[in-house]
Image (tube, rainbow, N blue to C red; front, side, top):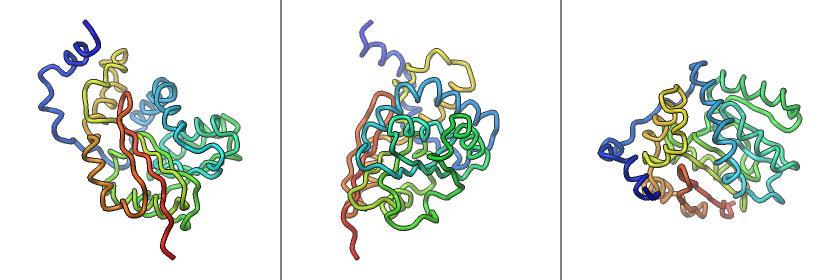
Length: 236
C-alpha cells in the first residue's frame, strides 16, 4: 500500500464527520488532561512540529517573543533553546497551565528568559509594539474570536515583526503520526483538537479583514496549518 492509499484508508467512510468543526473550550483546567497535553508536547510536538514553527522566526531580530496561549510552556522552552538571545513572554488564561509552565521554566533553569502571566489573548495588557514576534502552536482552534486575537497580535507586535501561529488541521489523515497512542487519553485529545481545527480556506477568510495591517500567508504542514504574518507599518 502506497502513502496515498494509506491516507485514503485512514479517511475511510468517516469524511463526512469531519466537515463541521466541533469547538473545544477556551480554558483548559482539567489537571489530568493538562498533564496529557504536556506529554503530547514533549513526545511529539517538540520533535516534529515546534522546530518547523520556530524556524519561521527571524533569529537576528526576534529578541522579545510573545508565546500566545503558552500552555505548559514547552514551546517557549523550545524557542529559548533555539534562539539563545531571545526572551519569551508566555500568556494563558489557565492558572493550572501557567503553574506548570513556570515549574518547567524553573526546572530548566530558564526563569531569567521565560516569564508567564495570565492574559486574555484577545485583549492583553501589553503595550503597543512590545514584541518582535508572536508564536503559538495548538491554540487557534480554542480561540472564541480568532479575528480579535489576530488583531491583538498586530497591535502588540512591532511593524516588521513576524506572527507565526501553527495549529492542527481538520483532517483525519495526519492522525497517522500518532497511531502509537491510539486508545489513550492523548489520542482522544489529539482527535478532539483536530476536529475543532480549521481548514486552510477558513483561516484565509478569517484573515481577510486584517490584510491592510499584516501580510498573511496560510499553508499546510505535515499535521496541521501554519499562519505566517509580517506586520505592516502602522498609522500614527
